[in-house]
Length: 163
Image (cartoon, rainbow, N blue to C red; front, side, top):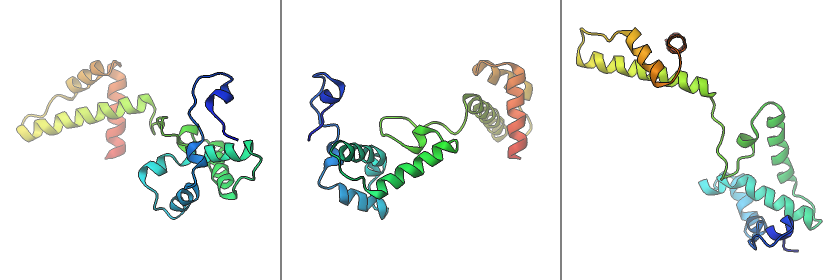
């Protein structure tokens, strides 16, 4: 039984076989390369996509699902249940992974780096004249659309934690 996107969506949208990789006669070789860590970067990126395809094929064709596929999904689901992000645990090539920082944390890191880089550049040019930190913080606050207090807090918290 060949499943096409049109049959799943109830219309004549696309005739592409959405399960092509999972149906491939080379799927077992792919699984072996994943298992012994010799898969290419592209194969690593497509790992869960291909597993989903194979899972769907087996379900729709009333075939047993390979235990290693169930184990891979169970491992990913356990990580999600423990607080992991769905996109990070079951990565699909067309989805971006979530960042490790919130937007505020990213902004704070950028503020800190910009100020420190400006200070370091100024000290390279002139060992005597250090830039005025209040001016650098104010400039960073303007650039990142936040208050002076937020920029100052971001800078000093990161400076303390990285010192």
